[in-house]
Length: 520
Image (tube, rainbow, N blue to C red; front, side):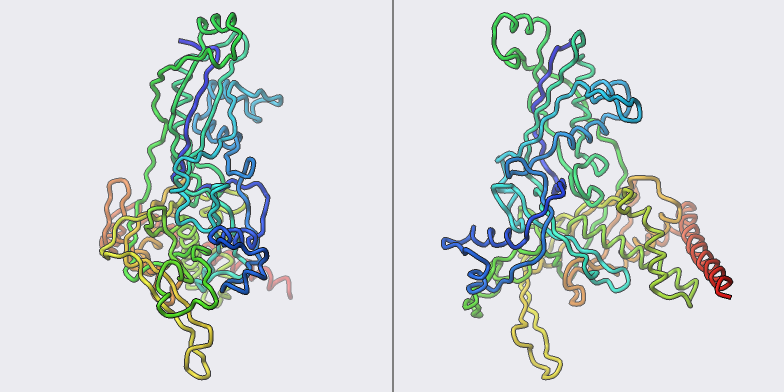
């Protein structure tokens, strides 16, 4: 069966947060003041009025805005179309419906597909915006922060704090597509099956995710095909004498398609946090009144200065960006330590710089996509009856030994819990990179990694309780070491890592000798 025109209606449901940058920025202070006013009957006209009543300072930074239409989050048609083409793969069918690529022809054709910007739906939006920092119902977005961890100190690097707007997981977008073949051509049922199969695969993996930071778990989605209507020759003849709008001649059709989601092996990790977790979200807490600081009002979600990040159901989570940053920082630390062990007289900062440069291909930079992809860590279980745990901290005056004035901090921490994440590979890894990741996995099994706020207080420390990949289950560091001794491919990867370290150290020695010759 063939059609002169086809109309597709679908829904895209986000399974992770989405940010599609536009280059536009907005003041963080304006967003926070608006969020504060949304919870009050009497609104503050300026930040000065707000400061007089609340314990909150005006933030000075700015945040990156996500793509909008009429002040409401949307997805550009070009973004969806590009990912859809990637999911379709190369071939004559793809060129026909999406147009020729720039590598094929100098003068491009648009193809038969007509995709429109995806509009944000009100369906389930209120639930998606629960527990989202600086949430705005009108735009359907929240605001979160990103940082960079110093691989040597494990602390936040100076001047590496930024904020960006995002659409939360659970939000839905309406998608409308038309297929308009040129005169004398038709859309076959076989082509339609292939197109719907590739459309259903959009957002199914990091390789097919939308927007910004797709290697950190953002931009994942699920496409649901709601309706497919087509105009065949008979319907077209009837419309030509009716005088009605062309789309009214389309009839609902049933298309049996199979999603082209690829089978990928991902490393599934269960992360056990025995001492609690505070992977915090700035601005989740509501500002406190300056005169409302009595003891009986403390110890609640409403008054906590810091709160753990959580999903719409209130369960703790760790964002993929945090895990990706931790993985990168710890990998740099391992490589830098190995270089220093090979060259003890080498300045530590130089070893750190060398490790950063060597890992650009593995973790990506502004010019290339990372080979390693991480998802966010989501809820699995907890033995605690109540997830919430109230913690109070005080800064001690180093001269008097007593509590420093106005240095009482309170935090809402998630109790001991287990979260699950996945790590997958986007491109083929070099053998030495695989060896490095085995070293990281060993440290994770031994509980040497921490994430989030309060690391020096024991918060965020975790150990890998189990790791599963391609039918292999590892539940202890002893099992991991036993596999490393018996599997010849793992032994080769670890040897390749040692050789890479020796090569970097040797190259450093060679450069030093050249510099010494030049200085004579």
